[in-house]
Image 1 (cartoon, rainbow, N blue to C red):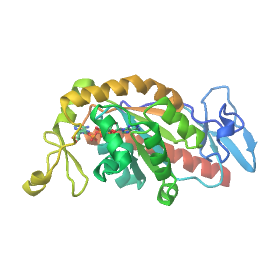
Image 2: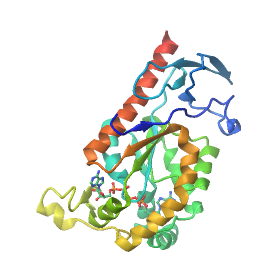
Image 3: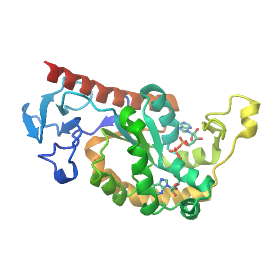
Image 4: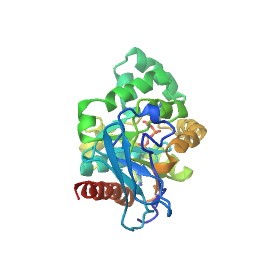
Length: 292
Ligand code: AP5
């Protein structure tokens, strides 16, 4: 797993969760905190029967996993400071796992480009490196998460939630990821990544002048730079990130996988891939235990 570190435990079954009333339709992919004194157990919640099974040993801690007959699609949140590589990793994750990529920043930039009322207001905050108000962001993200493609293929949520109120809104809607990936990158690297970032408006692909240069002159000539990608603005965005990150992490600490994002993008992806594979294997074990 390299430097990937798993933090055990995850969401609780409806009968155990402190937020049980918020989960009228609980995910079948439920995890219980690993503990040596736990023994396999069966719980009933509404009409769903969950069986808990101790997983075979691996590098990761022992999760106790609850399973129902049919696994839901994977639900992933990816988080990290500005320019930590979220978008870059999302490209690689979606290529392999086929999840629907939902990026709060991209949704907002689409509103800005459309010059909608929300877009005009959002731009004021984005230019200051501040969080766009919840009234705009929360419904936007929720509606995208509930679209049929996200529900059927699973989702990869990028850059949301960024505050305790946004995390609470997801919890209130009963929307909880299977895993929360945190990209950990040192601050000097973040600034360099922001300043060198370029975007291809035709394909949406992310480049970096030094680390990920365009493949040919034609692409190079059409690359654009984001309006908030200056050293001055990234410092403001970083400040906002530091003000909020702990509150968000506290909501997901039980399912957080911290990834060393300082490395080359392929090596970062290898860590994420290992984590997602692990989650997938847990599901297979669960299905097997139910079928057995
Ligand atoms: P958003 O668009 O989400 O920006 P961000 O969080 O600042 O993140 P970035 O998109 O800048 O970076 P990234 O982590 O995706 O990195 P990337 O892969 O591109 O948000 C923008 C603004 O919108 C916010 O400031 C806020 O105002 C608003 N907003 C967004 N979400 C909100 C919310 N939930 N609530 C309220 N407001 C919200 O990589 C960066 C560069 O580094 C690229 O050039 C890439 O090629 C390069 N790179 C990536 N990985 C590597 C690597 N491993 N090695 C070398 N180079 C790499």
